[in-house]
Amino acid sequence: MFAFVLCLFVLLASASLAQPAERESSVDPPAVGQPLCGLVRSAASAPQPEEASSLLQEQEIPGEASPEQQLPIRSEELSPVERLRLRAERQLFESSLVNWRFFEDLAPKQRTMIHGVLARCGATGTTSLAASVFGQFNASQRATFVGVTQAMSNTQIVDRRDGKELGYALQFVEEVLDIQGENGALPSDKQFQLIVRLTPDAAQKLERAAHFEKGENHIFHKEYPISFRQFRKMGLRGQEAGLHICVTRDGRLAQIHVDYRFGLLHLGPANSDVRANGNHQRHADRWPQFRLVQKHVKVRRIVLEQRD
Image (cartoon, rainbow, N blue to C red; front, top):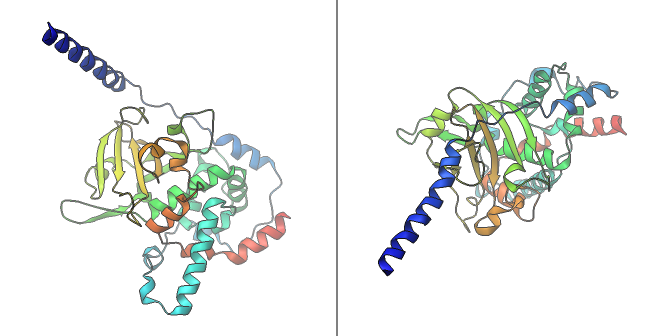
């Protein structure tokens, strides 16, 4: 009798575990509208500051960061003076991650993505309008956009079969559809992430990516069931933060965020909030390519004076 009850219990447990998988497989692809277009319209209707074209040229925008700017800086190869400068730059970078205010301080590819939002919403892509749209984002949206795109722009995807470089992760993004910042009314898997359209070959390249673990999303991110997690390890400095790219089954849409925490802390919204205690430090440890932050310090000062 005991054996019969035990078998019945096991069968019931198995059935209950199977149900989420069945529901998951029938989840329809997410319907993505144009949630950022309201901000674009609002920015377009506001008075625009004078173009700082002599300092921030439009032709800079389509470009990529140069290889030497993307490579990590090894502090042991620097002089004491250079180490102090590097430490100051890192402090500026970490504070900027917590509250990134200026469009002019974004890297060229990041600015291109904001211009892409304007184009998608039918707006003329001037630099001043793009800066105004970026200013319409709340602090959590700006931090999310900057943190995720900076991590992707410095994550080289390598083919695990032959070691061939397949491109930086940010090159897999065709356009940004939404920037989901802090929203206490939503579950944690709908905060602090980007919703993007991927390039047609992005999913295939992620399938071959070394240092990424492929899996299935069973509870969170269910509309984006295919999971690609960048390798990370608790307590190992420089390896605690990692990209998590969740992809639809057709390989064209993705939710992208950064995981900073482990265990139960991984389940809360602060897991992917770069502003949360310690997260900005883990970010800078993982992706120490932050010299672009000061590229437009002069522009930042002039634009600030114009806005005031």
